Length: 186
Image (tube, rainbow, N blue to C red):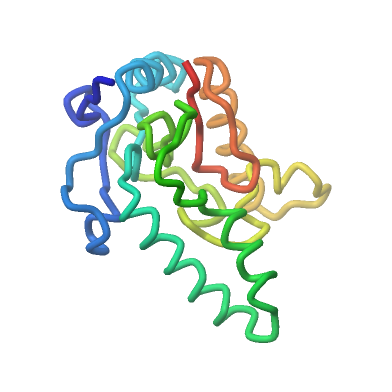
């Protein structure tokens, strides 16, 4: 498989897992077909807008670090839950760290991306939660269920709908619990 540096295609990047010390390089790479699909998706964004990419291809070691961090966070959030229930929550937001992954649409194979939209000045659009927020509010369609949204919720709802429309238009698939996580299987 061929992997490409997304920055060379004009995407904004913020390699969070590198900053945490979990990834060996600040360069964010993705499988060639996935990066080309991101380029195609960007064409559906409003003029001057772009994607900010936090993560694409990751190693098994990085995945293990993420799982450990999520487990600790859930234990702090829900101290009375059993280890089994904590694991269930962890694997809602993190893929199991298999030694070999066959599917192309995973972070391990560079076919998944964690991203957001930025405006012409590089400012992130408001999405209602941050990346790797481990709550139900992170679900892509979370705001769809509500009738009386406040101003901020309306903005997050509109921005998530834009992200969803753009990504689906370019052949990406949503991971419903995380508005920021998208998968490309071709």
